[in-house]
Amino acid sequence: MSEVNMGFRNPADAVDFATAYDAAFARWPIPVEARDLDSDRGTTRVHLCGNPGGWPLVLLPGGGATSAIWAGNVEALGRTHRIHALDLLGEAGRSTARAARDLDDLMSWLDEVFDQLGLESADLCGHSHGAWIALHHAVRSPRVRRLALLDPTACFTRFSPRYLLRAAPMLLRPKPRRTRDFLQWETGAIVFDAAQLELLVRAATFESKPVTSPKPDPTRLSVPTLVVGAGRSKAHDVDRLIAEVRRAVPGARTEVLPSTSHHAMPWHDADRLNAVLVDFLS
Image (cartoon, rainbow, N blue to C red):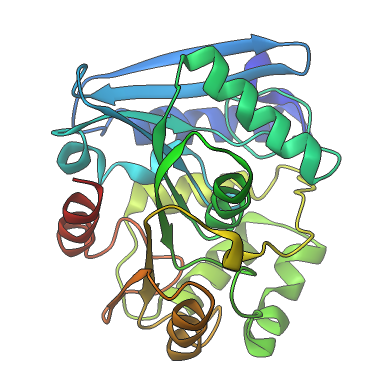
């Protein structure tokens, strides 16, 4: 289990996480190729699937999640796109690359991933903190063709104080039980996919220190952009999110999925989300 040991508090936690990780990918709906990209900073795990001749689509999960979170989306998106789903560096997953020190380091890593995958141009989609990374990259890189942001955090609005207060115990002293309780609070009556929940819970034992500043400047965007808000998100006020998107990026397309929450995206109400994404990316 050496490929997932880095950052876990003890080997048993790494084993439990690896078991949950493999169980989640055992349910992947289409054939997938796992590839490790080697560099001086370590390895980056990429899962490739979908149309071999399709336009490249890079998927970035939220903080504490892995590329497995896209299981409900890859079949629909893979009909037209060649999907490259990444495990983020410095997070639980099979990427062993050292954590980024700052934003420049993080952007350098993503540029290197694009280089190693031979992506001269690609569509880019991120959820939550992955959307934060994607927005920064789209502002800086000329290789992003279209940008899709799923309930982006710390991009257009601040986190809800109630959300941060509820998350504090989980963030200060991460434990599987605390993560499970927090996710079930945020998603409410939504029934969490068992495999995804177990993987997110086991990822809580990974000691991550993600880059979270500075705030991106969306007014500098020059590519077609889609922002999808979660109508039941407790991370922020979705109406304010959409209003700020329209103010900062007047040409952006905005959508709200009324029945889903922040942490239930992108797997909950996936058919509706996939229809929006396919329409935008096509």
